[in-house]
Amino acid sequence: GAGVSQSPSNKVTEKGKDVELRCDPISGHTALYWYRQSLGQGLEFLIYFQGNSAPDKSGLPSDRFSAERTGGSVSTLTIQRTQQEDSAVYLCASSPRRTGLSYEQYFGPGTRLTVT
Amino acid sequence: AQSVTQLDSQVPVFEEAPVELRCNYSSSVSVYLFWYVQYPNQGLQLLLKYLSGSTLVKGINGFEAEFNKSQTSFHLRKPSVHISDTAEYFCAVTFPGGYQKVTFGTGTKLQVIP
Image (cartoon, helix red, strand yellow):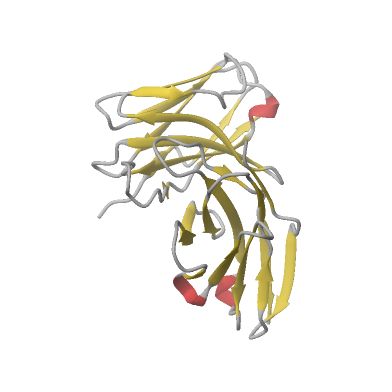
């Protein structure tokens, strides 16, 4: 079946512009996660969705970052007034997270964001 | 809060040689542990996981890992690596029950030398 997809695969934007990154999770997966991967930094957790609600937003680095999820499916991560330090690969993952299941996360290929 | 340490940022190894990628975690309670692999320009893919039971866990592509509670380690091993194993490997930890954040290590780049 189809895996997690993300678009665009690459995005180059000018400092100060807003960007939207999209994630399409695996059908039926209720949990959705956003991570940021910077060079040498590993994966930085940003936000977790269960259905359409976000019980854990603790990883969002500033109020310029926001995310929403609609219909328990597609999620959009928005970065306003982008800064050069926002340059990174943004990864989305989904999981059929229920108590007793495997806890495995399925990752998309990522969006590489470059802020010039 | 839990944390994961991958001390080796890069590990070069000759083809067909054995390899061990180290992972240590800090937690005073039970944990779930994972190893993910990331091939160039791709997302992460689960290699193996430890939830409970046998401390020796076998995963895909001939990898295995051993959970050692006393040493708080979950090292990844392969007896004979192949060129195709060249990738970045991430160790991750979470807690059982309900929603628990998954914490990832900083990754180890495995470079297999022909």
